[in-house]
Length: 178
Figure (cartoon, helix red, strand yellow):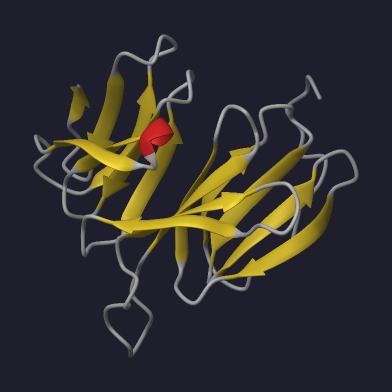
């Protein structure tokens, strides 16, 4: 609403929610946290599906065509230390069964943010290792480049509307363009 008032509180995660993404058509959203990905019907304010993952999900992003979603993994669990899938990213086919169609890893630190470029050609992943990893979507998510100018872990990133630039910030409060 134009008043800015909260119209619904969607409940389901048992831990922190660390990633949220809305489908390109605005009908659904996903949230990442604990060790689940949850799919939400935005019109009816209800959870449609829970996808269980064996490692905390940290970030999520829909591809602009709405047919796939990237999930960035990792994080510490109290008393257990590092996770075997810290730094892994998964691509799931959506809608439907949320089948994992690709899994990759170029870092051993957890993924902090994930974004697809608006043209859908590039996937960017921010990491706790201070780097941004770029992948060629049409080439099976082949590694394209690594941006390594941050002095602390990447907290957020996003593409320019023409998909030519990435703006990012980090735990050291720096703001960079690449």
